[in-house]
Length: 299
Image 1 (tube, rainbow, N blue to C red):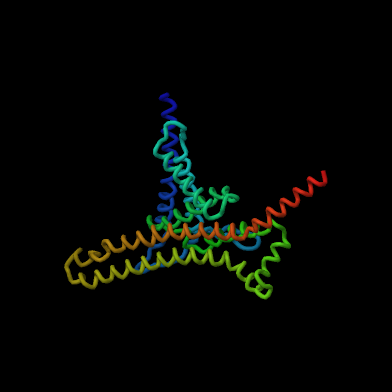
Image 2 (image 1 turned 30 degrees about the vertical axis):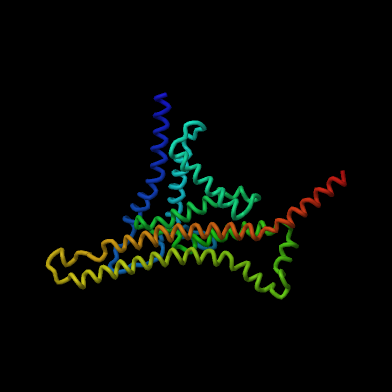
């Protein structure tokens, strides 16, 4: 029993390290590679190195590394919450895990219907990856959601899923959908089709990036105001950042925490809406019923 409890505790420590070490690694990498700068510094993701490729070099940036580190941390969190699941004695972590599963299942069922209940794990992954990526800014790290390339990759994946479910009734039905409700709207429907991933990517990226930029500008402005009003005082009193105390932290709660989690929720809701809305469910089941009847008649 003691050996079992020791191995259980050792695995818990391993999973906790999987959650903490990626963040520590990202901070260390940034400290070692970030060049020193003075004043306002609003830049994109730092480029670490590039891998030569036949057509175009593969550039490895700060946003890519941070994305992988976030995924490792999420994996550690999932393993920690699901470690030691029981049917009789339920622990606090199991209550948390069950609550997350129940809430995501209910959200998918309400938004997409019974047919898409298997989408719960995908939606949970979107919420976790987007939310935790935006929260990286709380540690002074570059949030991957501030990189259009990262968010565009998610939007393209969602676009592939949307197109897949639209093709469920065949290519003819898919092409006919562009002429609905009237034929002369076909060009607008085609534009709307390709505008879906663009709007999803730019909405998420723009809101997260704008919050980061506004926070930096306000913090820098408050630093200048402190120097303007207290600069005449001797010693450290003249350099004391009085107006940077409190307000940047309050703004961080909104831009980094609330706004980041809100954008993750909106991206997940748009994913569910576009996928379920693009699936011609009635036509699909009607076609499936016809094929079933033909097979029965043939037999």
